[in-house]
Length: 129
Image 1 (spheres, helix red, strand yellow):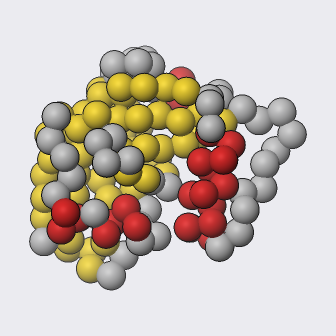
Image 2 (cartoon, helix red, strand yellow; image 1 turned 180 degrees about the horizontal axis):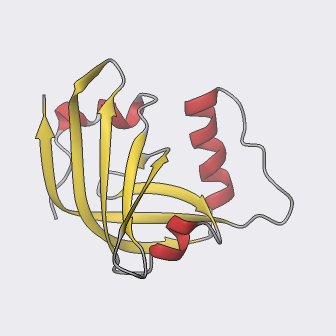
């Protein structure tokens, strides 16, 4: 499993939006913009139960994520990998952390919404810029 090179780690610290590609049950691709994080070995995203990306990402599902530098759109990283871990534990706190990074405010939680963390293990990296 390749690690994200140090020269691209800033993309996970900036307010860089990522585009997550998943596979629909009929085999067609689906792409969603997402907030993104990196824990040192996995790309980490957070979503709510019941959303399309949640339904498409089972344990072991193949996904791709592209993260573009907001300061230079020609510099980006594409990560292709698989869902290595799914957990609700700590997901509410994690989305608050991401919301602070991306919006400067705590996340506006919806009553009854269940948050989920997906850890994606990189299998291949494509680096540009």
